[in-house]
Image 1 (cartoon, rainbow, N blue to C red):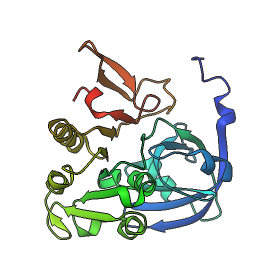
Image 2: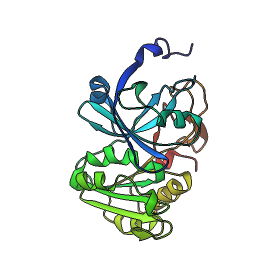
Image 3: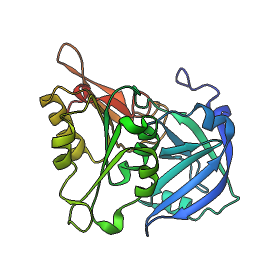
Image 4: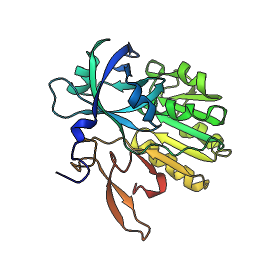
Length: 259
């Protein structure tokens, strides 16, 4: 057994699904009650959910932490998440949490948080730590796909929404409003599709603004044992090596990633 994994099963804990809401035809909002785990979960981390009938757990980003509950907002993308979506209030949900390296935030720095699609949920807990020093830019395909807007408006001073088809907010991609917001930014934090993150990383480098990206990667074990979520990162000497998104990330310095 790899070093650090001995006794892993003892880290799994049961939570009670105290609230379940369907946000869109494919996106669900779960609140899991577990005071111990909620107290130690940090922005940008994720959990591994045990799905009935499945051996491998499903990784879900933490959307928010509210007193003694961990909030998960996830999209049905396969059989595992489909089974998850059928869980009901009062059910016991077994999770391993918190996992991964999250965002490194400074409440005194004006930070722009950028989310794309299902990369939007983890931005809520992160941006909520900074309040008036947080600007949020969220991008979606269309008006029907927009989620969590009211939640963001409660915790940040400025929320900008873009849609690919122009049916809501700004017509275009998140990089368009970022062109203006980056001028006053002291840090950028982003989560979403790889092409979006690549463009944001490029813009941050051009403007000399530090940037942290949360990578979306398929993973199985969630603890760095299976190598399934390896990503290429750059060493200081210019060569590349592979690190685990689940253990070394999911948040990386944008300039470290070998895009």
